[in-house]
Length: 319
Image 1: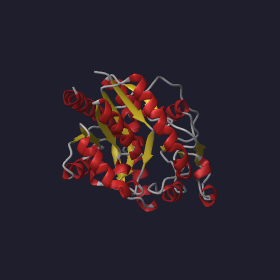
Image 2 (image 1 turned 60 degrees about the horizontal axis):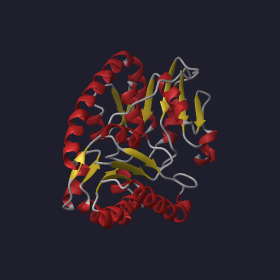
Image 3 (image 1 turned 135 degrees about the horizontal axis):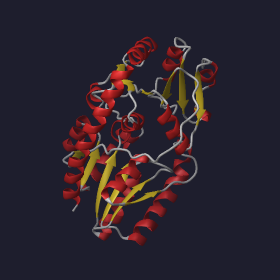
């Protein structure tokens, strides 16, 4: 059995981790600027061609396709249709419940019904996929980190704020909250070219925009902070930043959604995406940091055990 995992992205830690654990080759395929909708019409045809070239040359018997973009799974399906291979869709939350991908739900239904299985992150998404008459499996693989140096920090307490300037990230509220903690420093990731001018202007002295960080630098920062803030206003979303915090063993502040509260059930403070709630959450984090630190390590061990069982079941399905 020869397995390839294809992701239309310049980088994706989940794809790389998944591939490593299932014994697959990973192919990260991308052109032009990342996560810029303007370029989609130009780059998707090129990525489709490169996908076919990779698949025809390697001739896998099983192909994993990351979605979004959903069209990656579509072109993988075409290859598998003609070469009698099987394919698995690794469906992230956005591909199932967020525009513009919800406009193509008819295509997702078509593909999921023909896939060996569609991998999702939670029960809500699994129920959605199964309602289409397709097979779904909940899997959240662990993340492996290379050994990295530490990152120079300025505060008595330091947070990594996982941010991509996406519409579901309450960055403005985090910046307002930061004003209340002059001795706490907040390191905010994300490509600054995507920031609004007023967000940069409202940034207090103890909040630092890191701009886009190469992955190694990002890990240095993650390793060095006391905790991670990974917030979303979108329910049923498992943020990669929260997963990175968990498997780096860093206590977390995340959004007060039932799914996130269940998944990050230890070592975590839950807040609403409003400045007042975030302020209260930071106070709770600071006063309970020692306990939170011990709990997140326990939770990491639990998630590792779950992954081993999930991996065994997944390999039986694709074998």
